[in-house]
View 1 (tube, rainbow, N blue to C red):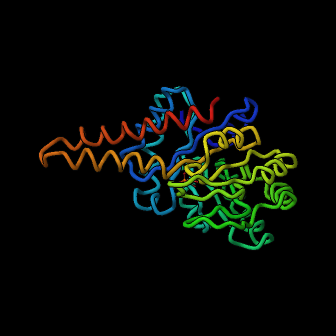
View 2: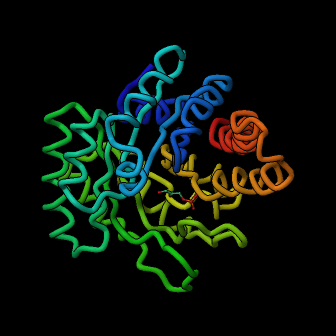
Length: 274
Ligand code: 13P
């Protein structure tokens, strides 16, 4: 069934489990992602960047997710990832998304809080869940010294914004595929002791399996995985399409790529639902 994100995270928190959030880059993968999660009886968040949402179309995407979820016995949410403009948050809400993220992490704390408050107002008015970000999740090359999230700032941020989920900077990177990241579990522990709002792990691809489990225990109940799924699809595509004749069924070829991504999805589910 199609639902919002907040109740999924609260239930995961009660159960001491994580909810995986998988990045979608193309419509083709949506039914497979929802079905694979249902096979594992796992609630799932399907999420897109603003660029992907615009490429597919907000409403078309939410229609496909809603229809894919309708027949399944698990909660499925559709979430807008890393929106830094309120107009994109509004477009997602009007387009039928059930969850959004406002990312003001590049802004000074006071401004991040006030912009997030505006985003929260938009989301609450439409019964849509909302995540925000405080601290930096890296992109591109690894840097050694980090602007980790300050636990005291996190306390103030959740109290003043009332978000449903908070992404925090503990040293993870988006897209880190070849080497694993050294995350700062002491920072996470300190945030977890002070903040009861479900926390979000960004850059899940680069996090060691054992660290993902620790993150769940330390309050991260939404765990994002993007790059590794993309890699498994594209890797399969290189092989499958490389060996295919041009008149072979595109459907059959894509099913094989989807199957490769589904295997990665199953592994990630096992990591967060232990
Ligand atoms: P990865 O692509 O590193 O798994 O990160 C996904 C993510 O955090 C999306 O916001």
